[in-house]
Image (cartoon, rainbow, N blue to C red; front, side, top):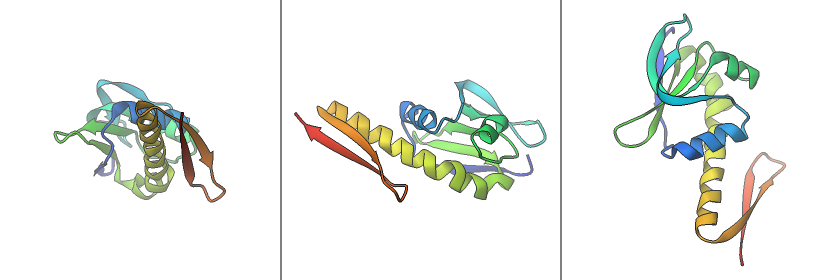
Length: 134
């Protein structure tokens, strides 16, 4: 890894992260102490989630190393990645992941409150969630 970078996110719910990655069709590994491999094949950290470099590339995201997620002491996940990938990951992974995470959170809230929910994809790329009470 040319330079290990970390980004503390607002993501706190493991199930919502999984749902977001599933919605984006990005394959990932989940477990305890999963090795996060850098650009040069060295283990740079360990985490609970890992998206391998090859999985990122299959999803259309160019990357020099794996992307990992590690739970911090305050309950948020930090993202671990190669510094050379920072700008590519911001638009290719972080923004869509955050959007899908919020969708998963909204759908879970709607279900818990007894609402039915429908996802609508708008032409500008936004997602609208319409809830209905019965």
